[in-house]
Length: 287
Image (cartoon, rainbow, N blue to C red; front, side, top):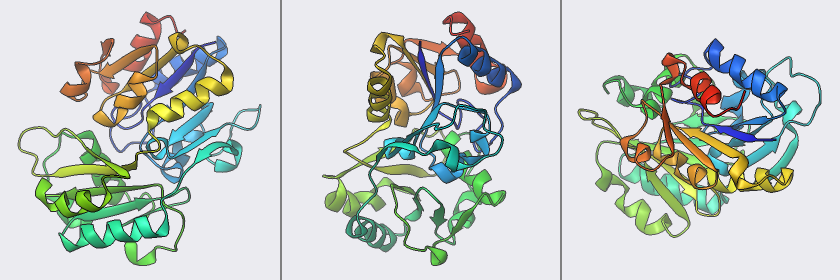
């Protein structure tokens, strides 16, 4: 058995989309039929993954490792419901104090925030205005532009109901706007700043608890199935995939991915729209 871990935005799907290419879905299904297991490994929270769960993934590493759950039924999933993924291996939300301190400090410096939990996401009301003036070209920016434009359930911060939060995503114009928050929070949280192409006037950053990462999620699942690291494969496109790449035997970056990640992986495959997942699965004998 081999274990395969797939990032979503910019890897399995075009940024912000919820439908993988037919070639990728066919390759995933064939690999599972051959006895392998395929997992989502993403910065998205479980609520944002609902449209993808109907494709019968074997589990999820969500919220950049903050929430790890396995498929808990033997039959195919016929609807996008979290109830089919109730075997929770790990969940570490922020404390109320951490969440409140982070939001207060970030907002004081004009930083736009989205907080993410298992059951929902809540964003600052004026984030859409900030994004609409940004040029295209970065997978994380595209994800948020489309999520907001298509109303995929990011609710206004004013509607936040106190649900547990695993991660905060922030955007601002200058990295210096994060200085105070870093001084206060960096001992407990990594500030993962995504690579942006020239001309993009946006600092896109995730606050991720130092106690977890995509890599810790991979290791949990490896241990659960007692699979050697050599028989694990990771696919990603951005620097928040780095820890995942360290915990798999074979690491793959999409051709459209961050240059910094490409320098560190074992293999580069074509982009999503060029059937990269399917091609890499064939070349790596995963189908």
